Length: 184
Image (cartoon, rainbow, N blue to C red; front, side, top):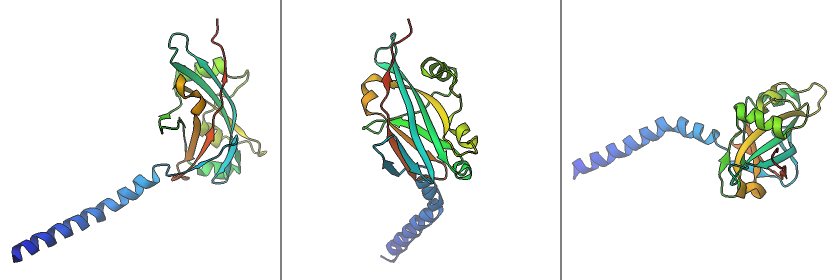
C-alpha cells in the first residue's frame, strides 16, 4: 500500500512539473489568439486608441468559377501615429458567422484584383504599411486588401482586425460589398 502512495505522489508531482513548464506556453497561446472580439455594427470602431474604418468594399464573381468571388477592401486606420506603430503588426481577415477565416491575397493576383476593382490612384499599401506610414496630419491612413471568398458568404462577411500588441482584443466590422460585373 505504501508503494501505491509513492506512485500516486510521483504522478501528482509529475503533473505539477509539466504544468509549471507548460504555463508560459499556455499564456503565449492565449495572447496569440483573438479571444475578446468586439462586434461593431457601424462602418468604424476603435481598438487600442486606433480608429479602424471600412471605406470601400467591392466584389466580382469570377465567370470561370461562379461559386467564387474576388473582394476588394479599402480600409482606414486613424489615430496617434505612435499608437499605430505600437500595434507592431496587423492581423486581419474576413470571417463569416460559422467562424471561417479568409486571409488577404498577398501576391500578384491580389495586386491584380486591387487594380481591377480599386479606384484610380489607390495606394498599394497593406495594413502594415499604412500603419507604419501614417500621415502626420492625423488623417486616415488608407490600405487596400484583396480576398478570394465563396459567393455564398458575401452577405455575412465581417472584417476582423487586431494588432500583435492588442491581442487578445480584436475588432469586428461588417463588410457590405458592392457587386461589380466582370470585364468583357
